[in-house]
Image (cartoon, rainbow, N blue to C red; front, side):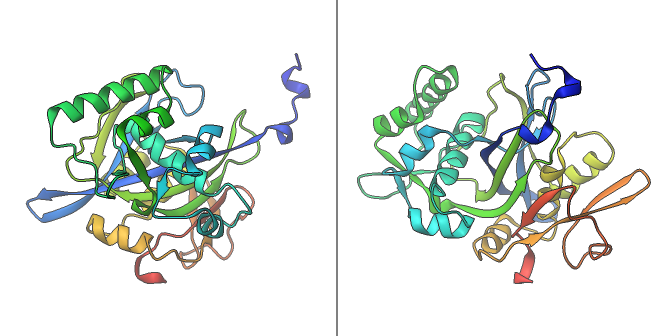
Length: 290
C-alpha cells in the first residue's frame, strides 16, 4: 500500500457522472415561486458526506445498455453533439434519470405502448414503484429490469443539459459531471431513501444560497454555483425554457479575496482577472440567452 507521501493525485481516475436539478413551483402569498429539490447525503458517505446535493451519481455500464434501446426524446448522435463527445453521450441522460428515481423516487418516463406519460394516480402504482425503488437501492434488481416490467421508456426530452464540472486535482475521488435540469412531473412525490440520502427539501434558490453562505447548508462549489444560476428565474417554467435553449457554455473562473472564494461567470465583476485553473466548470443556464 502506498503511503500518503508517495500518493500522486494526478493518477486519480476521473469518473463520468450525471446530476439533475428538479424544479417546481410552489404557491406562496406572492404567487407561484420556483423551488429546487435538494438532498442531504448521510455523514457516512464516502464522497460528499453531509453535503446538500441534487439527485445524481456515476454513469455505469447499465446506463450505456439502457441508452441503446429504452430512451425517447433524444438520439445518441444528438446527445453526443450536445455534450461534445464522440460516443456514450446518451448514457449521461440515462444516469441522470436513473439517479432521480433511485435517490428521489421520481421517474421521468412514458408508456412504451403509446408514448403517454406514466400514470401515478393510483395507490397501487405508487406502491409498486416504491417496491421497485427499494429493490433497486437494495441491489436485488436493476433499473433495466424495472423499465421492462413497467413497459416504459425513459423520457430524455424532459431533462436539459445545463452544465459541466470536473472535480479539481486533489480529492481521492474525481468526477466529470454533467448537470441537467427538469421540471417535476405532475403527481409524483419526491422522497429520500433514508440510507444514502437522509433528508430532502424543496427550497427557494435564494434561501439555499443564503444558508450556504451562512454555513448552514454544506455544498460543493459546483452545487452552489449551479444553484446561483437559478436565481434569475421566478418560476420553474422560466428555468426550463432557458435550459432548453441549449446555449453555448461559459467557462467559470475563481476570485479570492482573503477568506472569500467566489465562482464567477463571464460578465460578472472580477471574472476577467479570475483564476481559470482552480475550478473546471462550464455553465449553459442563463436568462435571456445572453
